[in-house]
Image 1 (cartoon, rainbow, N blue to C red):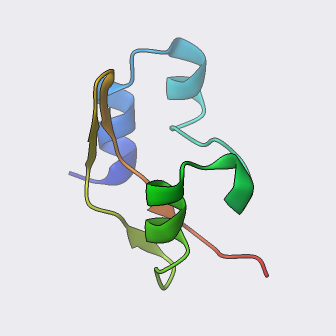
Image 2 (image 1 turned 135 degrees about the vertical axis):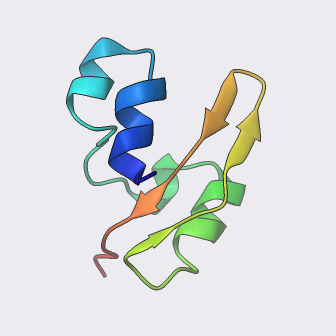
Length: 67
């Protein structure tokens, strides 16, 4: 199952689902430290391991790191 298949099937927010889960460019300081560390340690394109939170599970696909 691709990242986009997962977003289409499981995202409950209709607008975010319509955007295939795309949140746009995210700055390091806008992310929680544990997520920021994982994102900026990747070599894009890369799908991070699922992050379990109280509100659900987050899947993050890092497409590009802009310096």
